[in-house]
Length: 248
Image (cartoon, rainbow, N blue to C red; front, side, top):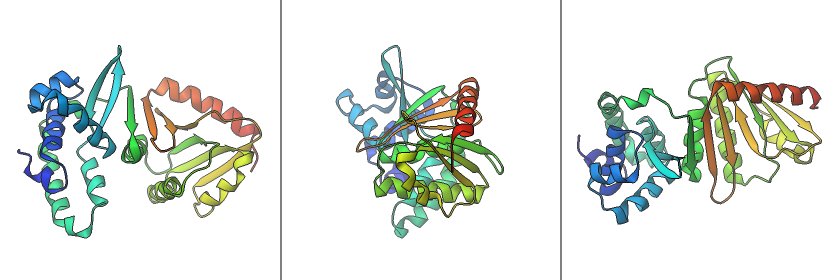
């Protein structure tokens, strides 16, 4: 497998080399990425930042060292979907390529405990990863942000809830009463239930049966996905206590 197909869908030669290198070696420091991709150290950080913004790479920090990993090849389809219709033939090519990519890597079946995503593309990738294990009649809970959301994020939330409705996934959300206008954002969704509390909510947090997603909005959004059933259960128990105190 060379880099030509990835270059056809909009990645540069350097981005293609780094992404394919990460697919093969898994969670890696920049030294390993440089060695595998043959990209110079002066360029590899810039390339990794660009891939993170496209939602194709994420990173974690261990012992003050940054490690990178590629997103599942299925995420290439999400990236392509935002392109114009002229790329439809390339989407088909990528779909045909994905099974071959998956055969080349074993690490895709293993998950990291904590993963950080950055940028608007990372925002979508983090949410997709968050619901990846959920199916019809499953539920996740959300402590909503108290800050004002831009139209970009409101549109992302609408799209996300449309996807949830199609999958049959329920959502319960708690916001501060000062943000009651947010209820109109969920008005049309039959599987989204919104309540309010009078006390401060420190951060936007989503909790599923085995994951916790911390979300910070703004010009440079950051999401931290923690895969831990123990932590998720703790947050869910707290959410249930708050839900009892909340009001429609």
